[in-house]
Structures are given as structure tokens and as C-alpha cells.
Image 1 (cartoon, one colour):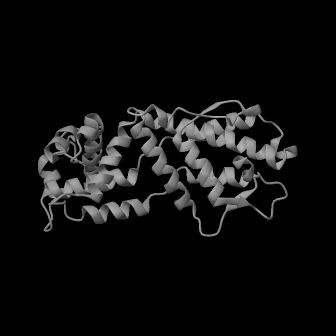
Image 2 (tube, helix red, strand yellow):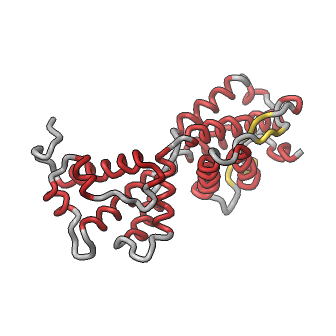
Image 3 (tube, helix red, strand yellow):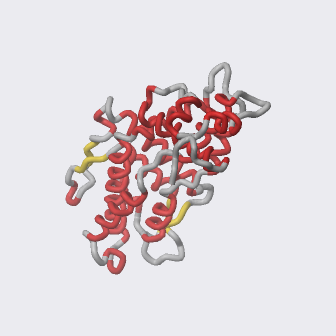
Length: 266
């Protein structure tokens, strides 16, 4: 299938090509593109979309083609978010569970809590490790910063687009959080939602990944949480997830055997 300027493509495909090109250019340039500085001309060259088609596509009465393109690019970045693959967390959880066969058949509340704590540690470690070298995370955070403080001459509708994109996101880790919570006989406390829960963890995860190259302490916290009080390595994300679980989760009264999270405080 031809991809050059001579190819006949529809408006939606042309738009996606241009936005995809912009995301690629930002990822290639990394955090140095702090001003969301992708020229529409550069995206045209990268995408192969004809110049006349691109400028018609982003023309409007409310802004220039360049400003409208920047706004749409920001929207697409925020809608995409910056997450590691949830399957990495799921694989880490399955590895821990495989080491404790029968835990849900005859495990005590204290034993369930011990295994869940190890799940929290391993899932957090896997997620943080995947994001540490992620250029997409840095580009995403740059987009967030641009939407919060767009400068003296923001692109028309950029802040509104950013807010709508944020509200439209469906955090990919929520299904895993739900599954593990139910598996260990727990539920959310009144006043909490899974969106709130995920927002707390995501904020910590992003901060952990961004600070990691400059501060070794965010990923090398030693705690005596292992079997027989053995030392284990934690990330700040794992500690935040542990604390959030303590605050946000409670035993499900419909379940006869639930993890006793209060044991984490001992």
C-alpha cells in the first residue's frame, strides 16, 4: 500500500498519520521538546501526508494550522497516557502466587496479607522498572506540564482538550487492582473509587521513574518485610501502594477469609 504524498487517503487517516508522526518526533527528541515543539511541516515530512491536505485539515476560524495541530497533538498524548504494560504487573503477580500454592485454600488472614504484600512489592518493582527508561513518560509529563501552564499564548482549546482527554482515560491497571483485591477478600472503603486509587499510584509511579536517574533512594529502600524479617528492596511506588491499600481497602464482609492488612503495621 503506498504511503507517500501520491497516496489517496481520507481525512481521518491523514490526521492520524500526522499525529502519529508528531508523537514519534517528540519521542525521538525526548524531554528536550519541552515546548511541545513539533512543527506541522516536520510532521508532514515524517508522515507523507500532502502539505495542502495537512493545512486544510488543521485550518479553522479559531487558530492557525500550526496552533490547531499542536492542540490536537497534546490531546492525543494525554489520551494515550504513559503506562507500562499491565501484563508486566500481572506476570509479576502470577510469579508470586505460584510460589504460594494453596494460599487461598488454607492460608490464614496473616498469611494472605504476607503474600499480598509481596505482590504489592513485586508488581510495583516491575511497573517502575518498565518506566524508568521510558521516553514516552517524559513526553507525557511534558504534555501535562504544558496543559497546566500553557504560557502567555496557549493554543486555542489546548487546556480544554487536555482536561477532556484526562477524563476520558481508562487507567489500564484498574482491572488488575480489582482482581487482586477480590482475590484476597477485600473491597474499597466507602468514599473511594478505583479512579482515585489509580491516580495516587500513577502519580507516585511517574515521580519514581522521573527521579530515578538523579536519586537512587527512590528505588533502593530496604525494609525488613521478607520471611523471618529478611531485608527486601522496595521502590517509593511500592510503599505508596502499600499505604494506599491500607487506607482504601477493607475486608469484604461477604468473604469468610480476608487478608489482614493491619498486620502490615506490626
